Every structure is written in structure tokens, then in C-alpha cells.
Length: 302
Length: 220
Image (cartoon, rainbow over all chains, first blue to last red; front, side):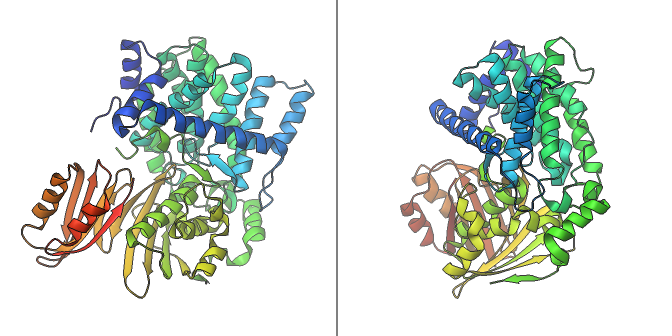
């Protein structure tokens, strides 16, 4: 099969040797593997970006899920930011509010773009639309942000996992936060290697994160994990741009994530049987939402 | 490589809440619908692993039914698929299973109408990407990334050659091919992923070949 890169090491080497940004390598690989034109690929990504913009906009107006577990926090965060009292600074609060906005829309069964999954869909757009206000990117640079995120996610998906059921939350919000960190670095003018360092720094701090959704819903703790994923992406990007490097190479960090996922018990991989889902309050919420027939063995609809 | 496109990572555009449990599930249902060739009248759906534990919360059930009604992952009608199914004459039943499947997100769909029955097992491997792992008892690996031909035939010498000749004559290149049979001389299945668009003329040509019993297609 024709493929330009299978590892982050190969991806960074290609970008350096050809003196191209990582986003460009991703676009070229997409053209090679899918035999589609550049215009087609750019147009599809542009559509995905529009979906992300609409989801953030909708979430910032305030949405609530049918279970009542999530909703309205994006609005709270924006109001707090407007007071000017934020300790982290407006950029971080803006990013987490937009990450939360996207996930609140997702939980309410609205339309989103998975990045790389729906449960982690807030982090890449949340950081993008916050960083946008600082760096004033062109539309093309915003699309490149998504291609660079995608390039790193592509390596993770093929060498490890992006599924909570297979690898826990480290595979979902962990991947998303690391992908976003790499993309922020490129948009801020860092090198391909610095993108890889940012990815590693964030992923190393997501390792071991379990997938334990209360009542099996993509709401608690997923929405807040997207907020933290966005914050970590910004911190990791800043560290890499400052020149901090990861002692463990990126591909080995990804491999470590994969092995940790494989050794995670099934109760902590999206079965809603362990972690926060198994707390007294988690169980009580599940019973309240689904009643006692949640695990009935034979439900018939017609 | 299981994931081939940047849009497997930045995408799909979908109705929430879960890419694996909602979008991936909808795609499994839709592939089953496409391979069946028409809307089934009934469906019995067995769920395993995380699918069995959390299907209600994730809308896995309404997504699979939406897929069986030919809805895409971003189709807002997924939300009302149960009511739509009732209106369109599709009855269905969900059976969460205790036993562990090889993959944590596995669904086995048995669908049918007065003419035929089809059994398909699909897995949702993350980010909305899925694979078909079994069709009517034949193990296979089908991702839906390429246009594909699924040809049920009798296990006889020369059938594979006549099918590949027909493809070659139309300039259709084979990207990946799997052949399998249940017993020597009995029913067999060819799964052929191709690079080009499969037109109706080619399907008609394949359908009349000796020992070929059924031809289904899956568009990219």
C-alpha cells in the first residue's frame, strides 16, 4: 500500500527533508491514498470546519442533554471570562469553554465533527477557535490545523487506538489533546519536531486515563475531560515552543499508550461498570435515568 | 492499515453522542442494508461487550436502525429512527449478550424479509470507522473504504477466473480479494475490493456467469 508515513518519526523526517509543514504532508498522503484531488480534500475539510464552528456557536448559546446530566457550562465559562477575573487567562478559559460547548452539543445529540471521536470532539475545535483570536490565522491555516491534528491522529489510530472501548479515555481525549498540541505548535510557527514534542508531552500526561462514563452516556465525565484536554494541549504547546523536549520519543509514547490500553480491565473501557460510573452517585444517576430495566436481557420493540 | 484517510480522524460529521457507538453503529446498519439490497422487514440485533452494556445511553440501537433505513451518520432522522421503522414496516429486536466477543464493540445483525435472510457481524473500531467481520457465516474483513463486490457462488473450478476476467475486461482493478467456502464443493464467497466505480452493466455480466448465485455491491 502506498503510504508516506506510518510513524511520527517518519512524518517529522518527511516534513524536515522536504521543508514542508506537517499539514502539507498529510494532504499529500491523502491525495496518494484516496486518489482524490487536492480541491476535493480541502473542500471536505472546509465543510468539517464549518460543522465545528456551528457546534461551538450552538453550544455557547446554551444546550442541555435529555438526561439532564450536562449542559450550560460553556455559557458559565464565557460569562466568567467576561468578568476579567480568570486566573488562567482568557485564552485558556476561551478554549475550554468552546471545548465544553462542542461536547454539550454532542451530548444533546446535535451535529458535530468527530476529532478523532465524538466523545473527544471538543478539544481540537475548542483550542483552534481560541488560538484563532491570538494568532489571526487565515482560513487555509485553520484547515491546516485540522490536517496536522489528523496526521498525528492517523499514526495513533493505526499504531494504537482511538477508541475508549479498546484503549480507555487516554485513547480518546488523550489522543485529541496531543493532536491539538501538535497543531497549535505549527500554527504558532514552531517546527515539525516541536509539534512532535508537544504531542508527547501531552500524551504522557494522559496515560492511564480510563473510560468510565456514568450510565454509559458520553456526558459525565467526558465533557469536563474535554475541557482539561484543551487546557493540557495549550500548556504542552507552550512547553514545546519554549524548547522543552520529551525524553521518550513520540512513537514510544504512543506504543506505551497502546499497551496500557490493552492491560486495562474491561470495567474501565467504556462499559460503564467501573470508575466514576460505579460510584454510589454514578449508580444512582444511572438508575434515575434508565430505571431498573437498563440491563434487561431482552427488550423488544416493534 | 485500518485507518486510511485523514477524514477517519477528523470526521465523520455525525449526530452525537458517540463516534464508535452511534456513528460506527449506524454505518454497520447501513452496510447491512446495502448488502441486503433493500429495506428488510425484520431485524434481530445481538450486541456484545461495550455495545451490550451501554447501547441505550449511546443511542447505538437507534443508530443501527437508522443505518438499516439507509440514514448516513449525519442524518438528523437517526433521532426518530424507531418511529420511522414502525411507519416503514421494519420490526426489530435488540438482544444484549453476556458472552464476550473478540472486539468490545460488536454487533451481529440478522435481517430478512419474505424472500431471504442475511446475517452480518460488524465491529466499530473507533472514530466512526467500522469493519464487517462475518457475512452469512463466512469470516471476512471488509472496511467499506473501497467499492466492493460480494459474490456468492458454488465452489467450482474456474469461477474465480471468470469473475476476474470480467473485471479485467472492464478495466476494473482489484485492490484486495478474499475467497472462502463453507465445505468443499458447497457455497463459497468472494469479497473483492476494487479501485473503480462498479457499474450496473458489470453487475449484470457477473450475475449470469456460471455457478454465480448472488452479486452484492458496496459503494465507497
